[in-house]
Image (cartoon, rainbow, N blue to C red; front, side):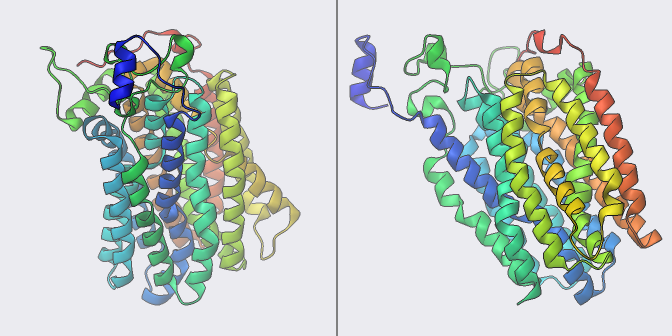
Length: 454
């Protein structure tokens, strides 16, 4: 805050109104960061067949690399949320993007299967786990007091936008000059965003002397230390009132408290199935499955890119709906629609793109991560200041479900020669998720937030 602003505040005067709240600049940079980090999300489906052709690795081996990535992606998320509270959003995001870039760049040197497990699995898994959905929830909860559902929807759409931006180019590069060029594209996309993050991604409204966007409507104005909002920018406190420096302890404390709440386990179960039916199955195995039916890889990649287009629309619309309707009802509807799509997918796959496949792509795209805004909203309502870290644990379940599905689907393909049983099983799981979501307690959002202190 500048000296003139401090003078105005001390004199009881309000400084000049900003035309654009700084929260929107932070959200814009966060969106670009998510786009840059999303490149690898599309990579396994595009690169799996070329890697098999060059090295002779089985679908199970490559699925294992994806599963390691997804496990670390998920397990890193709650600790990343706590690290953002302790060291700041900017530092954690910059390091995460560098890990993604490093892991993807090193992939071009692999010659043994364990090396793809290290690059695809460990390095990129740790990097992507510090970003994506937990990052979006942290930005929304820290910088916005109103419209959080819409903001989370827009930021989550950044991952879809990343898939849309990278996927067609990656598919083309995988054909000529080869999959190594596609890996370098991912690295470049992640590293290109780092300077923007370091310059523009502020850690909290207090850093620029404002309150969260929308707080002004409730007696707002410039930031005051006495009015600092209770958000994910806070850190845990010990019983004696001192701040806890250990982000891991903070994340585990939150897990301990959340595990006593029934709603937490309902969200965990539903989101595990969500991950299994998106990143685990469609994201990893749609292109290889389409290839099994004679469809060119570039054509299948184009279909996934269209999924990304409608994912953006669906997720933003879901954020808007979450601010206005019961989130548990939205979740139940989303999961059931997804289940119907997966049930008919084995019939739709063929060597050519028929109108019925276009319809599937549109519907599945609208539903892809539409579950995120209502899930994050329930976490915030039920767990208060712990909401972002709780969402990190829920997201961990999402990625564990994705990892299990990616590996199991690869095994099914190797054992049976097709993916049909994987699609049908996933459809059944979606029905289970719909039922679980519909039974979330009606008064969940009315509970008092769980305290930040241990």
